[in-house]
Length: 127
Image (cartoon, rainbow, N blue to C red):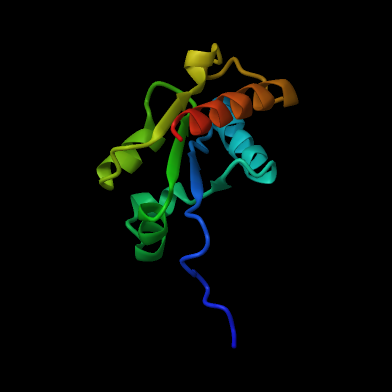
């Protein structure tokens, strides 16, 4: 008998939504979320799908055990997308609060690791 796709025995996912904007800090946010996914911290998920209220993406997000939003700058696009879609409880990180400024931040392994570590800490602290 084939296994159900979403059986109750599996734990709910930890989802990571990252700013993936055109600026350097958007790229660092995106790469950090991808690194966290690769490291098994959580799963990067589609912020555009939340913004567009795509039903399957909304359902999966509602089922998440924890959510993390990572924004590159003070505009807070990822945070606002989640809030406008009705999500109020989630961890939140912003690169400018880590000393990374738009237009002045190198997209390099050190910055990606710094954001990944902070994102992991935020997700863990919400357990």
